[in-house]
Length: 124
Image (cartoon, rainbow, N blue to C red; front, side, top):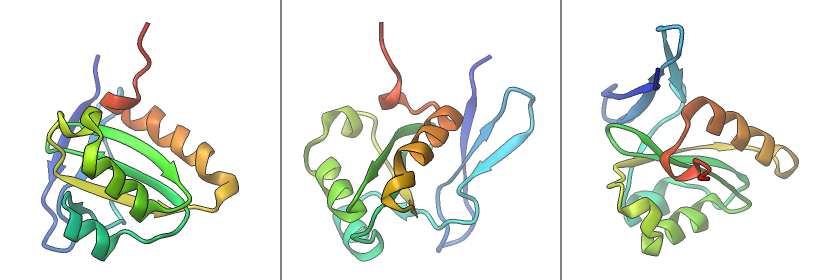
């Protein structure tokens, strides 16, 4: 059974919080304690820090991509400006977590396993 995604409106400061229904049927909130931000340049510059961490890009139906970077703000801006893998999925928002460099890949892998993002899926 495929995981089901849905966006939950939580108020102006926490829009687009992503939930997945896990295989057991109960909803597991991903980033519920985190704010979610609109997918546009102004929002990235004003909300994403130039710090080490992980991030998720999503639309109202699915998680599109989970990544990690030493500079979250710069990496999100790069995706916005020309990553067609992401833009063809019509992103509406992003979230991030500050994570030390030594732990970024581990946290990214945890989020990929939980969210199964469209653009992180392996083919073949």
